Each structure stands twice: as structure tokens, then as C-alpha cells.
Image (tube, rainbow, N blue to C red; front, side, top):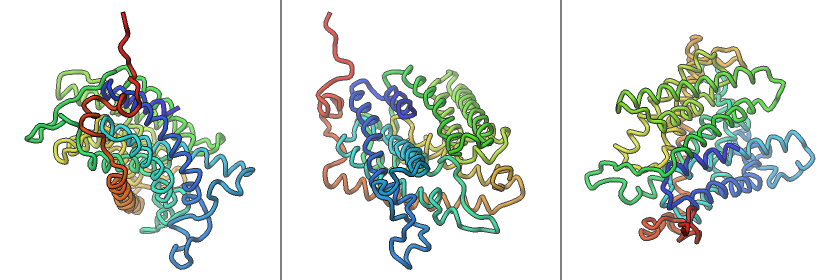
Length: 401
């Protein structure tokens, strides 16, 4: 269901001539990443066999059993875990679609989707959620980096992959002037943006609260309330932040603020009090806008839908927030507000490991695709729009009288 939200959101922020292409990518990346996760990803993330004795550090880096869900056909708990994690893998995958929209060849995009679902997401996920080294690392008497529902595992992974993909592709034609100043390229359907945000907002309750994988866990209510408070706070702060800058109530800013609040609370949602969720949602907005400014004004990277600021910027803050606001009431996780510094240091190690792993693997992935089948559509195809050249059909064909 959240996949539909991402599709509506991104489609609304890009031009009408690329709609068929975008909707195809948004549907097929879900399918292809899911197959990759079924075939290889789940085993790499949760498999218990050692790959190379003496080189796996107690199997804390990679799993190597259960490929194609072999031997798990009638194990209900394993199948449930696979299904839930498959959706997370697909979510990380689809984040990239918006950042590379309007210029990336669909063949290249679908190749990327398989790699991230089969390899990149699951191996880093192993380190945090599969009993890997980040979950057992000890600093100052505190054990394990924490990411309850995926500010890092899902959103920073997808956001960093989006940054690398968009940077290697280059900007859309006409996005930047010769002196490097950006031009606004308007999307075609603002209602789509709002609909997509509403769908994602609703779906996030399953995303965060569902991460307990137990309907009887009483922490679900706290998670739901924290998610809600962070989201609405992010929306309000972003709306009025933009109003203070421009004198206009920008609903796109409000939607992005809502999503930033949701992304930021995803890691700490089970570990913090409601007042902290409000603070986390509010602070996600400066991370959102600062990342957008650096991306566009400093790095000159074109991200048509703001995927990198929402998912990487706010996701970064979400991981840090665990180490700041965790109050010790759930699983004994304690942050700076309790006088403990170990958790924050663990979160910083987690961030470094994530950036290193995803940065290297996705750079290699996009480079190989570029050198083989090619990343970018031709100039003529981009100017025409990718719908007809790549799909042979327009999303909005001209109607006869």
C-alpha cells in the first residue's frame, strides 16, 4: 500500500510526459526487488551459516543459508519475517525512483532494483537486524546500535543510493543555468502529491508499529502516537518555515515536512516519549532543508522529488535521535537525556558503516550499469519525455473532440 503512496507522490512532482515511465518503474521495482530479496537477500540478511570460517567474525557480517527460502516453506515465523522484510527492501528500492526521474533508462533502473534488493539492503540489514556486528558492538558498556523500524536500514540506504544515482546521471536538461544556479521544474499534479503523502502517512503506522511483529506488544500504542506526533509536527514546522521565507503556504513543503518527521521517528519510535517525538519531528525540518540546499546549491545534484533530503537527511537525524532521546523505558535503551553517551557513539558508528557500505556498493553498481547497458536516456528521448520512446504510450493521450 505504501508503494502506491510513493508512486503518487513522485508522479505528482514530475512532468506529464514521463508519467508512464515513472509508474512503470514504481510498480516493477517492487516486483524485481522482491524477487531479488527472495532469491538472495533474505539468506544474506538472516542466514545462519558461516561463509568462510575465520573470516566472518562469528557470522556477524553476512548470512549464507536459506537462499530461495529453501527449507522454510512451512515455517510460519520465517515466512512472516521474510514477507515483512521484503516490503522494507522494496521501500528502500523505490526511494531512488524519484531522484533519477525523467532521465534514467528503465532497463538501467530495473537492473539497479535487483541489486539493491538482493545484495545492498540485506547485507547492511544483517548488521543491524540480523544479529550482525552493529547489533552486538559494545561501547562504554552499551551494546548495539538501534534502528527500530528503519530510519537507517530503509531510508538512509535508499536515500544514499538515490544521491549516488542522481549524481552519476547528472541533472535534467535545463535544471541548472551555465553559472550553476538552479531552475524550478514544476511537477504536473499537486493533488497527487497530497494523496501520496496521505497514503504514506497511513501506511507508516504499519511500517513502524508493525516492526514489533507482535500484535500483543503493548509498545505498539506508544509507537503509533510517536509516529503521528512527529509527522504532524514536521508538516507544521515545514509549512511555516517556508511561509516565513516566501510569504506563501507551500503544501509541497508541508508534505515533505510530514514525511521527514515520519522518516526521523522511524528509528527511535519505540524508545522515546511523546514530547521527544515532537522535538524529533521539528528538528527533522532543518535537516530536510539543509540537505536540500547542499544538494542543489553546493553539489548541483538534481533530485526532482526531494528523495535525498527526506530519506537521507531526515534518516540521519533519526539515527542520531535514538542516541539523544531514548529514555530507557523500552529494552533498556538510554540516550543522552539519561546521562548515557554510549548509545550515541554506537549510532555514529552505525552511520559511518552505512555510508561506507552503501556508498561503495551503489557507486560500483551504477558505474557498471553505466559502462554496460547505459544509465541515461538520450537527449532526444529526454526532451520528448520517456513515455513514448521507452513504452510506446502516453499517460495522458490527446482526446479527440
